[in-house]
Image 1 (cartoon, rainbow, N blue to C red):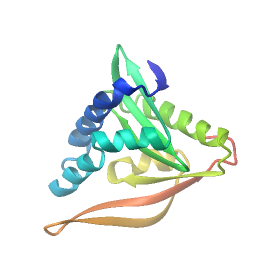
Image 2 (cartoon, helix red, strand yellow):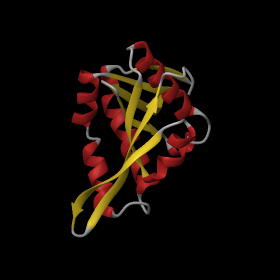
Image 3 (cartoon, rainbow, N blue to C red):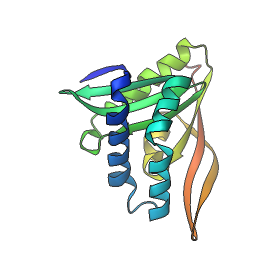
Image 4 (cartoon, one colour):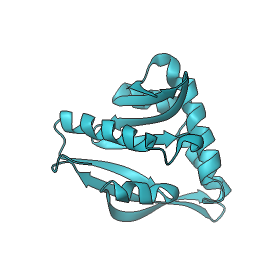
Length: 157
């Protein structure tokens, strides 16, 4: 598995990875309108915006992108791991690299939004939930998540 910087040709495969992961991991956890919101939020245009505004990385296995994540200013976002590769340390590798990039940029802390399925992962990494948040996605449905932060001052993950 190779962890590398995003290349222009990665845009569509990254979006496909994200949408596939949302379908598998968020369906049944979030209501249907929230799942649709996540997919729209992580559109091809949004992937490209993250590339323009910050750093995006990918993990590739046998020529297929299996994970991605980004750092824009002090926010880590768009961290997704193909469901077949979850719980194998791939997400930890992505987060280690993003947190190292944040430290290298002189940041004392990183921020991120935590989805329902990912809360345990981020808390084990030392992220502290700051507040509950939600987005009204219409028709009585909502997308619940948390704002979280991690101090990078300890030098560890």
